[in-house]
Image 1 (cartoon, rainbow, N blue to C red):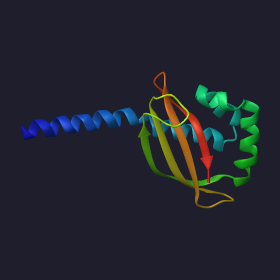
Image 2 (tube, helix red, strand yellow):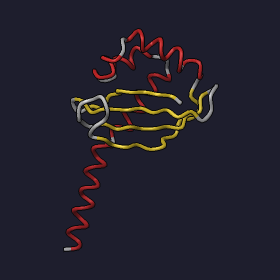
Image 3 (cartoon, one colour):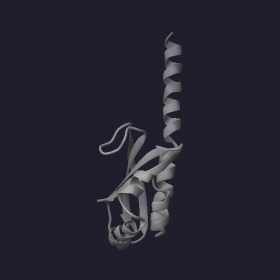
Image 4 (cartoon, rainbow, N blue to C red):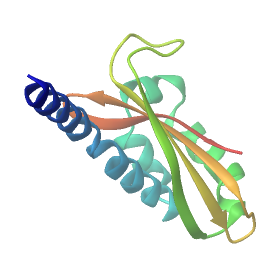
Length: 131
């Protein structure tokens, strides 16, 4: 009986981890688009929730004002991720909040926070903040 419970627990952990594998990959892809200065593309790849909050033009202006002055990314290390089924201001669903310690050319030890939601089987950005 003990072995059976261990196998069930292991299987459950693998299934949960398999669901979350794509979120970090999606986050790094989306952040690399921003790193390349392709702000319009990052908006187009974001979730409809994100797009409904600001226009593509306002997103480009916001990133030109906040992100561009930081310069190139020198390093980015994942600090962690946390899954949620509900967040304030949005419908219940699958969400992951990821944080990164990022050293930019002109700002060391920045913290980037990226929130993703799973829509149609794909992780898409709904929030991005730099501190």
